[in-house]
Each structure stands twice: as structure tokens, then as C-alpha cells.
Amino acid sequence: MKGVLFSLVERNLKKYLRDKAAVFFSFLSVIIILLLYILFLGKMQIDNLTYELGNIDGLGWLVSSWIMAGILMVTTVTIPLGAIGGLIDDRNDQILDDFYVSPISRNKLALSYLISAWVIGFILVIINLIIGQIYVVSQGGEILGLVDLLKILGLIILSIMTFSSFFFYLSIFIKTRNAYGTLSTIVGTFIGFLGGIYIPIGVLGSSVQTVMNLLPTAHAVTVIRSVYMNEAVKEVFSGAPEGVYESYADIYGLTITIGNFEMQEWHMVLSMIIFMSIFYVLSIIKLSKTKL
Image 1: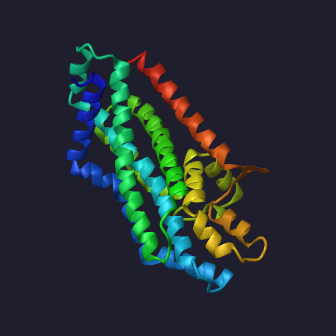
Image 2: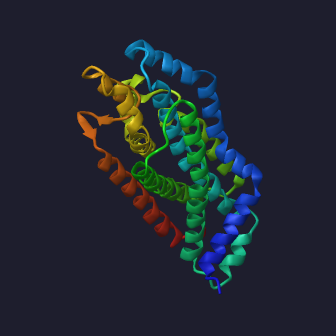
Image 3: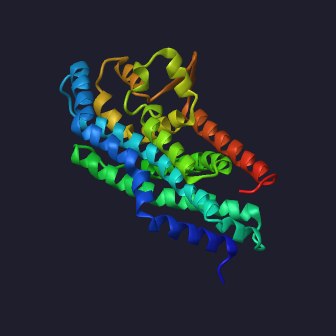
């Protein structure tokens, strides 16, 4: 016999995946970013790097890995955001009222929405990862090695859980689908900038860089890129003069420096765990005092 939590998660998954519009809009930001890079931004970046480094092998691999790692991070944000929206629908349709009069605990009910967002996010982000790898290979790159792939999978899970926790907390305060739709539009509009995808973080002003580097989006995209681009970086910069890679890393967001402090990868992973834990605890506290 299925457990209550499993049944709730299964129900949420089916509900989300049946809504084709919700799935499409979860990928809308990704589609826009990908089109922009295919049409002109990718060529611009390759031209800039060719001017700085010369016409060397691996630039297509480097640039395609950079953008696909960024897109991977974007989907760990937008897909959980769309999945959590099911909570708003259930509230508006008064389905939650039916759950309230049942013997299901509110903590278990809340956890079902979170787990659903994790599962949906993981499945769809993995599809994105596969598509991204096909694109990288088409640009002259290589498929991720087993160790790097396992690291990427771990970072995907962490990133999905981090942003799911944050959006779930916000959803407790949002009462209507229109309001949540507005939030989704705002996130979808700015996520490309917050992840340093439309405009590399390194070309922005120092104060703007500091603010962006404090956000978990910057930490997520940086650690994912550090793994995703590992082999491409070795290919392109192995014979480059001293300081060339450091300059590239600063401009294109492969390192994060706040003031005089340069964050290591473990710092970024730890910051994401702390961010996730804070909003999970805040959600539990809020749920203990109010309705979903």
C-alpha cells in the first residue's frame, strides 16, 4: 500500500506534467537564452576570444560549455519555480481545504510539494543536460567524463533543493496565481542577468559585481561551470601565457571575489546549503503558525 507522502508526491507530479503550458514556460527562459546565443551572442564571444587568444582549437567547446552550464543553472531555478506553483493552484481551487480536514499532517503536505519540485526539477534538468551535451559535441567539444558527470549531478540536486526551498517559502505568502505568475515573469526576466549569462559579471561595475556575487545564483552557476568547463579550459588555456586564464575567469564568472576575499568552490557549496537550510527552517516556522 502506498504511503500518504508518496501518494501526494505522485499526484503533484502528474498534475504538473499534464499542464503542458506550465512545462513550456518553465523552459521559456532557457529557450530565449539558447536562441540568443545561437543567433549572435555565441559568435560575439568566440570573436572576442579569438581576438584576445588567437585562432586556437577549442574555442567553440569553451563557449558552448560556458553557455550550457549557465542554462543548466537557469533550469534549476525556473523549473522548481514552476513546480511549486501547484501549491498556489490547490489553494485557489480550495483543494487544500480538503487536505486540512483529512488526517494528513501539514508538515507532510508541505514536504510533498517540495519533493515534487525536486523530482520534477531533476528529471527536466537531466533532459536539459543531455541536450546541452549534444550541443557541446556539435561545437567540437567532448562529453563530460564520469567523475565530472557525477559532480554535475550532485550540484544539480543541490541547486534544485536550494531554489525550491526559497520559492516554497515565498509561495506561503502568495495567495493568487496571478501574483505567482508575476513572480515567475520577474525571475524569468532577470535570471539570465543574475547568472551572468546575458552580460558576463566581470564587465559590470564593482558594486554591482559584489551584490551579484553575494547571491546563490552566482554561486550555483560558478560551481557548475567549474566542473562543466573543466576539460574545455584545459584544452584552450594549457599553452596560454600566464595571467590569460585568470583574466578570462574574472570576466566570465569562473571565480567569485567579494572585496579581497576569493571564494573557493567549497565556500559556494556551503553557502548554498546554508541558504537552503535557512529558508526550509523559515518555512517550517511559518507553517506552524499559519495555513499553507
